[in-house]
Image 1 (cartoon, one colour):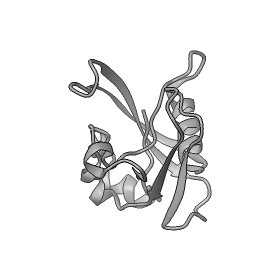
Image 2 (image 1 turned 135 degrees about the horizontal axis):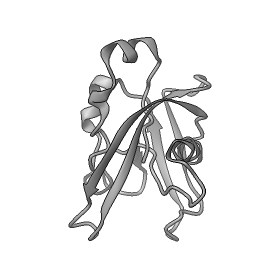
Image 3 (image 1 turned 180 degrees about the vertical axis):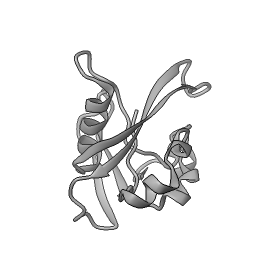
Image 4 (image 1 turned 120 degrees about the vertical axis):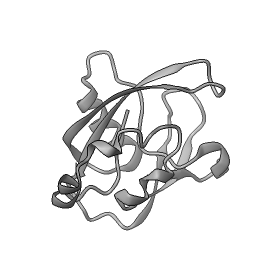
Length: 138
């Protein structure tokens, strides 16, 4: 999960990597790409957790279709907390920096804007057998 360095928590919330699926891209390829771009973590898809629609009103008059995945990092050498960001955000905005960190699955209720909507699809057995430490995407 991550929090924005220059955006108050009450505005940016606690987030996970997410983004737009490119025209020739599958949702599972997009989540792997977005996680790498936004956190520097290389990951693989363990399971698709489903799709949800999320109304972002009043922030924007939009309804997002979100694809949720359980991921596994391919390299667990990351520190407990690290800095990441985007120099050239796809929305054309200014560069953004955030602080990433691993949290226990049991603490994922803190995720904002419906980003934890499908965590209940991860069975306790799956959570124990796979070192799931956080990233899910859109």
